[in-house]
Amino acid sequence: MGRERGGQCLPLAHEPRHLLLGALALVRRGANAFAVRVDGRIAQPRADLGELRLERVNLPLTSPSLLRSSRISLVAGPAFDARARSGRTAADIVDSTGNKQVLVAPLDLADQASVASFVAGWDGPLHILVNNAGIMASPLMRTPQGWEMQFATNHLGHFALATGLHDALAAGNARVVSVSSSAHHQSPVVFEDIHFERREYSPWSAYGQSKTANVLFAVEGSKRWAADGITINALMPGGIRTNLQRYVDPEEIERLRQAAGATDNMWKTPEQGAATSILLATSPLLDGIGGRYFDDCNEAEVGKLSARNGVAEYALDPEAAARLWQVSLDTLAG
View (cartoon, rainbow, N blue to C red):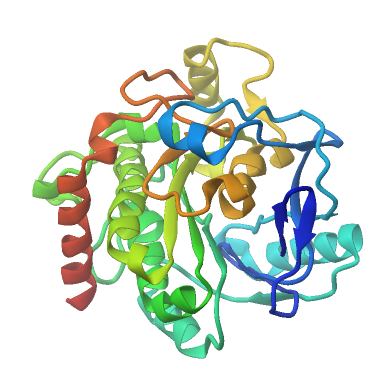
């Protein structure tokens, strides 16, 4: 991947290599720039870095662009069907871009041994890590350690992966993209009982808690790793009809549709859903920017919450972020 400077794409030193994994996407920079294709057109941010630092930015999903690039999609299937789905996704990327440097590797984020094995096998710098795995609103399930499954998969798995790959990320001056959700509005991290050992289990509260954790990871991680050249941002991709909804019955889907305003366009296409992730992963507007939350290719408004947009104040709380980081380290250490 190159970076846009003054209308030119400046190639970087590393050979193109894109790795698509069972639960998320990791990318090494190469010689090709990235653009965000949405409905046949390319998304182009309309702001400069100063505006981004100071205020909400207008980054429309479907404006024309002068970026010249192949279509690269940072999308992978869920861990439960990782190899087959990721294989199909990898084949689609190869077919649509001509880029044959797409590799698939298994990774189960709910299994810390799997995460450790993957980390041990990683070689070389890593430039972009997109933490895109997740399960949503599942019935109560627990890992062998007794951890609630949504928190274990959506947060602890990604946390272990990112911290395990820290040196590779630092070597790549990396960006980490933490895919959250507006469902974080449902719950802060309840430190007194994260794993629902004493309180009644709620699938949506558990999911919301894990998505808040994704944002807090970006806040604290950007603070801790800024000196290493690593930035982390979180985002809401939007509602996309995928296997993520496998635990949600049609009646609940309809309830969510009504809550979102019952519009026909509540669902995004996969390309639209990927747009904000790719923006955070590749846009030069975000050089050196971390610890923020985005939706619809814009920095989200704090405290102004709707069904799909806005970020809760507790999700950006630096004290909660620091506490969660330590709790996560202690939990993984056993």
